Length: 494
Image 1 (cartoon, rainbow, N blue to C red):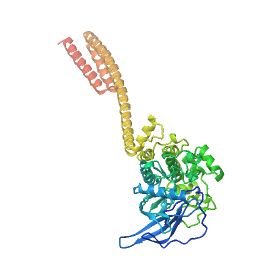
Image 2: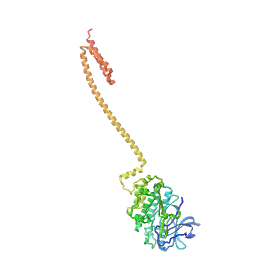
Image 3: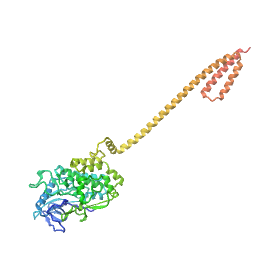
Image 4: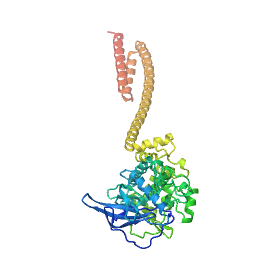
């Protein structure tokens, strides 16, 4: 992976009085205690050299930024010294660190920075095929750096991929505070105006509507630029893709396309110029007052390629970008500053909540939405609970059905038993009446009665009755037969 060296100054709206550079110019052999090895960048205010401190104190490679000469030298010097003052007030692991500063032999101010060897953040994400979650974690480190600057009353005003390099260790570094704004008047250099009349340095594609209009700049402008950066990292393209003449007006007048639709509308094309330095410069050059924004040129890939670079299928990528991520990004990109996030920290909190499966503030807090996020946050537990609940419902349903079936069977058996008891009582009554009748008739003709009972016993053997009923009737008939026999014996002459 080829690193894109960087520390360079590249405000994207040309500063007046800066002469264009078309050919390589000579550079000094030494600046202060540093030996110059080569030029690694060039921008609107100065040159950037790769230097090496190699004395008895220590050995270290650094990036040295030196003010260039121009017809508006005083304004450039103020802005240059302002950047140096801003960097001196910042100390954060994700911001390039100021090491030293001074004045060259020809009285040009310079400052020395950590030499950051890395790749711009959007290229890094694509080269490593970072997932959506991986890109969000990287973006959160950038948010921490910007929020730190805001707490120190510094507005960057030029947040874009070429100003954020990711090292080989995966650490993003925020660069180039060349057009940053100090909100703390105590940190401003003596005699320096808050802004230079008639100058609005910015990168149009990443600039907020208020920057384009030339209105007051606050931390909300950086939030907007972070929204554009997040949009680019997630969807693989910028929120608006018009021709150059339409760009500024569309940023002011139109809302950006939602993330999932942006992926579908992506097509292969190049915009913003060409890369003329093989990736070795992190910044833009000015040519005849017209910027060649090589750091922000991009080839917008087909939707399938964008999904592949994020390790997702296209339908799954659409699903991920819809919903919370879309709301978070579009809230940062609102045209009215007061309707954006109140701070970078609030935006970062929403991204962390998304990664944790929690509700985000950019979305209406409905009961159904909270339930959905609760389910997503405990997906495996909820799935297991749903399986157990389904099993319990099936078992409960089976028991209810079985109970109802048993109740029906019991009712049927009880009805049958009641019917059998009624029939048995009827049979008992008839049997008793018949028994009495036969005993009375036996006195007149006992032999005939005995024959009648014997026939009844024979007939009983062929009847289909319950065994217990059959045994009981048989016992009654046999008892009756014996009584008739005894009665006949008493009646016969001796």
